[in-house]
Every structure is written in C-alpha cells, then in structure tokens.
Image (cartoon, rainbow, N blue to C red; front, side, top):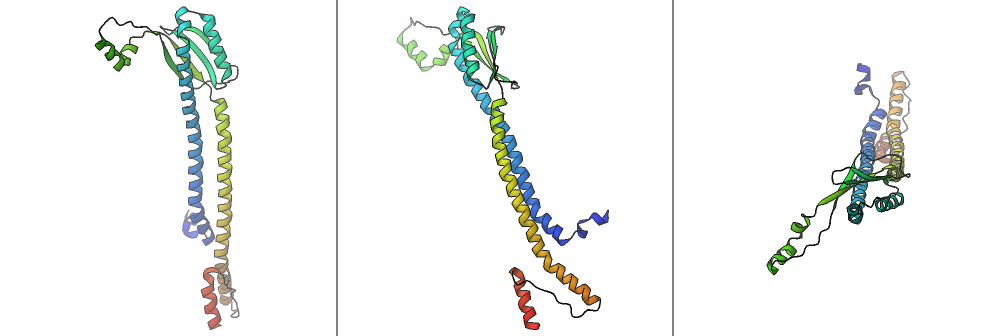
Length: 239
C-alpha cells in the first residue's frame, strides 16, 4: 500500500490536488446548499399559501357552514381549487371534524406531506347592556370577545408541490450549470498551471539523466517568464 502514499505522487498531481480540493469543496457546498434551500423555499411558500387560502375560506364559509348549505360550500371550494394549480385538496369539516365537503384539484398529481387546518368561527353580535366602562374594556381587549366565538367547523387545505418544484428545479439547473462552468474553468486553469510549473522541472531532470549517462553537453532550456526569470539571468551570467 506504500506505493499509493502521497510521497509517491508526482509534483503535477500534488499541484492539481492542492488547487482543485478547495474548488471542489466550494462547488459541492454551493450546489448542496442551493438544492436544499430550493426545497425549503418550496415548502415554506406552500405552507404560507395554504394558510392564506384556509384563512380566507374559513371567513367566507361561515354562513354556509352555519346554514349547512352544501351546494354553496361546494361552489366556493371548487372555484378556488381549480383557480390555483398549487392546491391539491380542500376539505370542509364540521365541529367534530367529520367531513362535510371535499374537492380534489385535477391539476395537481401528488399531495404535500402535511395539511393546514384553520377553524371556522361563528361570528356573534354582542349587545352590551352594561355601563360604558365595560364597553371600553371590551374595546381595549377584543380577544376576550373573539374567544367566545364558537368553532362550527374546520377548513383543511392540502397543497401540491409539483408546480413550484418544477420552477425551483429550473432555477437550480441554471445555478448548477453556472457552478459547473466555473468548476471546468478552474480545472482547466489548474491543469495549465500544473503543467507550466512541472515543465522546467522535467527538463532539469532529463538534463541530469543525460549528464549521468556521460553527456556533459546537456542543455537545460529555461523559460524567461514568471519566477524562472531570475534563474535565466543567472544562467546568462555564468554561461
């Protein structure tokens, strides 16, 4: 196993590894973060949209649920379910959470793992026969009055992530393509740098082999660019 140790690696391999390791780490980190953040954005947006839809329906269906107007409930939830492609199912339940009505959208193909449920409160009109002090107390604390409103049912909204995930997938593929392009450019630059750094060393090694073989007229061609310029000036002074 010793031949696989890093001491046996060539200088070019070491330069490539030292250059590309942080680039590959950055590439994997960016791609992984982008992928999981897109999934989280989809989940958060669906939760917020489901809460808005359920809250709006709970306020608009209060009269129909109180009157047990099934046709009116069906008309309301059908129109909303077919107008939003992100909605998978809308269910209306009574106070004991027994299903009154339900509609499943034909646009969506799979439901989200969780649903949002919002209670339907019956709005009561309070006629205060007490003094003005009690009226001011009720106005200053409206939650005390609102908490007395009985729950007459529930609205349960289940969303479908298909449409939003398709949009997020397109954005992720664009980000992945840009990151992959940057990775390819980095690999090309690292390969070119490793080759330019190891070329003079290979020439020197080849010249030493020729000298060792008895050819004392071996000549090492030194590039005059970059850090090799100082070596080239020494060669000209002692040549």
